Image (cartoon, rainbow, N blue to C red; front, side):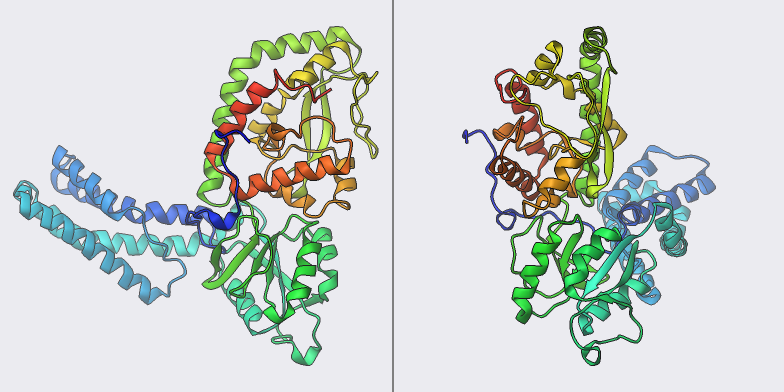
Length: 473
């Protein structure tokens, strides 16, 4: 590997940035981050307009400083009401104390209206408290507006697993629906059986998860069950569910492993997407910006290719094929047609060297990857990402998921127009199981080590490789 390339190590070797707590809705976390500072500033502006009729430069300066001191706002939705009152009061005393201290130290306090200052001392915390309780009442409705809740199961009907289930049930803003439990033990050893639903035994989990679209799995098993845990984790690698340990130990290779909490109960992620919380927002924004810029630059080229495909052979200009996308959901991917056939059935034959189905123009398009250019439209649609594991045809997915362990884990992110595997020699035909295994290893390395820097590196290397690599045909 060239020295300029990022070194991909294990997830445990890199510092993990803080992310929103599991069981807390990302939208609510963002709202709370801005709520307290915005209310602090807006309460000041209302008083200034009431007493003085308009904002002066002095008050704008105070507003900027107050916002900076209060940002980011604290997450209070999970606190009891009495603790919310104390937290807001103490936070405001800190902010107001600093502002008054700076005002007296600089002498600027004399230039400000005493009526505004004195009323702001009580109006700001009162406004914060009122707006917080409005948000608390609206939180469950806001979560429902974002779509269906994430479906979850708990493995291990013990005291710790039931405690997690009870907390999820009480948290109306968690956005997580607990479907039930799996446990192998006798009924008399199962904790909380009278109030929780038992779905089956451990050996039935993988099938249930795939059949019922379960997105989150919490393992509340004692470490004495280590062999069973390893066996279970191997079975779950054929699903796209995120897996978390409720105990404080883990015994497996991690995909984005990090400690976290669910409604205040500690968990450890075993297999998770790197694009949760701020990282997900950053990834999506970068996708939109990059795809828009690229489409703007290549639009004349795409028009020329479309005309060449149309005149070169009978058939549609755009070939639409079903692929697996995020969480294993089927998506439709666009390509310029490069063959005389448009296969999208249960059996698909990969293109081979000197394949008679490939048109003359199609051979050039495939060699330079220009047949993939319409997929930047898929990126804007939210079906794909600029960088990520390449999407495979549905027929190939169903074949390789039964042959390669962890194959489906690559679907925990949106598929990419290009990827880490493609710039490391796994572009084009995968005519052996070993080649596909190599591609999957690269895809999982990408999940473990994602960064925006890595994405940009892959993009630049892709541009260089399409004019040098002859692997695609």
